[in-house]
Image 1: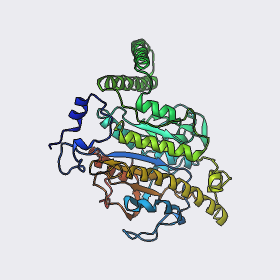
Image 2 (image 1 turned 180 degrees about the horizontal axis):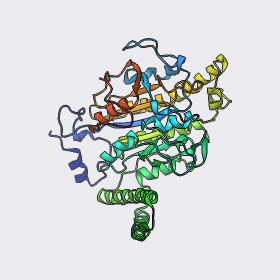
Image 3 (image 1 turned 45 degrees about the vertical axis):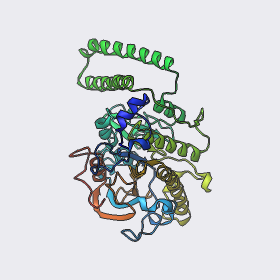
Image 4 (image 1 turned 120 degrees about the vertical axis):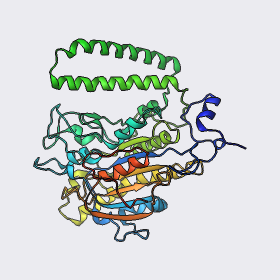
Length: 442
């Protein structure tokens, strides 16, 4: 029986493009290979954990396919063959370069951008466009949402949070431009509604109509305002209007697409009281977003940089950031190890979930790239070289997983991001301090 293209079948059925693959659509093929009619879309997700790691319990002693799983990585045993442990990568722009303290703010600010955050606690913030937003801009016409920005902890978008650096740097990973940070959403309910528009059709239509009228007013009103502004304010106004245009385009795209079929998933009315439940729910939503092809790009900040969360669920009642200044004391390092292992166990949950979702002749994990790590290495030293970085998934056949790969010192972390963009079929010549694609991934 001949297969039908995914797009034609969905239109013919009169349901949303945002659906999992159906068996009737035939097998999907890896990126750049086989039948080009039904290629599996590649996805990318970036998960960030703060305050570095206990590197002795993170870094495998052996390289290649026979690498060991140190204590922190033990939860990954069920998906070991789907994980690349990447050692030796550096976030140079997280270093001071004459700016003094503020390693936590710079670590998160530089993680996906490869750009030096401007030291300010005012409104003149500046970093760089992040890799997820490079992808989101190029893929915006293919999915209902260009990207998804999630968090496991509230964070301020103003004020001084780290040695003169704005709180926005410590709490934000995604940057649409050098001066446009994208705040993360921590409410599962809000995220679910954003993904699947759960409001009744009439209410959504009224909301969209009202939003359009507001956008029209803002656009007209800005013409009179612009002539009165200086260069800096004109730039800020232009960025604001760019965001307005983005909302308009999203509304227009949504109008052209059939309604989204809402998955059967119970979302709490408020943020779960238990942190582990909160994190897993956010991972569930990422899996749903990828499975239904609502978006192919996601970021998740599990906790803000410099976070002082406690982890009583693993017997650690002391604040995380304070413990990370362990002064090489064995007791403190053991507690940091337990926090690190907890975070990795949550990652394992996501990977196992993606691995369990069938898609064509593979799984959702086969058709995804999940990057995980921190912009700090050892929290006590505040160093930004030899970072703890994992890359999981098959990348639609473009990644040879199940290995530990060691890179030369000072290899830019952004080279990994450039390599991931390449596997999304997005040809980008440069990003931040990246110098080229990372070898040894396939």
